[in-house]
Image 1: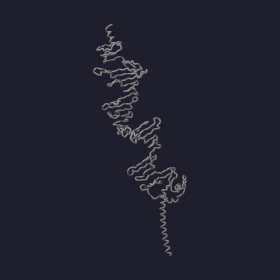
Image 2: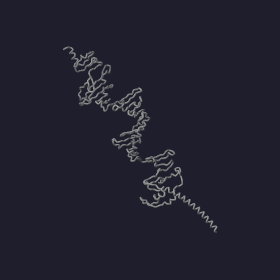
Image 3: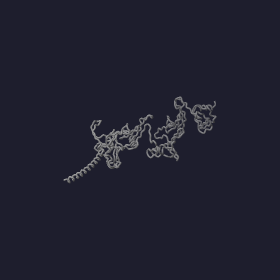
Image 4: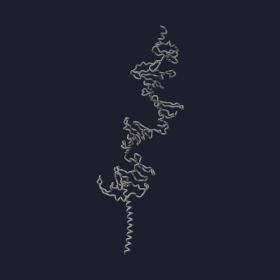
Length: 509
């Protein structure tokens, strides 16, 4: 046996270093090295005699579906034991020198089943730590940073409280933008970032819609603008926004006296909807206030607007467009401080905007309480009462007016245009009320209507209902004036006749 053969056998049985030895491609042949570890101090070329690095591979590519390659790394671990094939990169870590693995790339089998689903991972090493996986691409092409279970195209898991998850850095030049674009089928739809409203180097966070060419929302200096890029308040809405704010299903707004005390709320507004999108039967808006310091006093619901548009104050289930419930002072109206504004009243209008009447003060300084109809009369039940009046003594009466007789409220003043002599055609009667059988006296409205229709109040069906006894005194007064005038004339005439008779008697004697 040749000496060279003996030396080669020794090399194959041990780990050796071939120092400063150069071989040609023909000197290392397939099968020349058995299993073991070998170290080469020179560049190694596979398929080339002039490798430009420690390892150079040259050859015709091999393809596996969409991938072409010139080198393979195998892992012989059993298929059901999570096999991984990888490459580890080492560098010197001190002056000894010691080497340490600094990171690498690996491809592993995703499951223990008999399938070919795989993942690709990139690894790095933290100071004082071990090599750890930092990024993964799974078998569906999903990418994970700091995450191995991927539920989307990009998953970022940040476990360090002091680190930022994702940073998009804007170029410092005058055209710098930092944003994310959202596309559908290759068409740009939205931009989010700093800044896509054509303002380079802006410090505004903008939400920009490509189709409309508008910045939908802007956040700048702690202010939010919807429909405006220059919000002037904590939340500002631009002109022309049809619906300034909408909430789907269920949402709430909390308004705080002091933001540093999360539960010291001054006002809450909650939109409560049905979770079934096809059934909006429970939709409502509820308003809460906190009557004391939380948590000693819980928030109390004060007002609700239900699905019918009914408003309830002090009740959670209003049965009318406005229902107010309380134990005292349910509703209070207060006039202004001085002058004509010092009047408190409620005014009623019909659907066409015509005022029908009011309840309350008539004028500043008036101590009376009025229930007044502008046209027609006030009807209670089937009674058409005209004006309903309450005196300071609590006596209730009704008629054409209450106590307002001042000339300040009147115009076109003229002599009475009614024939007061017809008052003698009215026939007072005694009668019994049908409901109570109580005997009473007065006039019959239908009889009065034929003589003085102005004295009659009508019900909603246009039938004579009541008599305006208050104005009867005016007719009687006018008739008394006329009678007095006639009586005075008769008295004067009688005096004159008596004087003539006395004169005749004197001549006869």
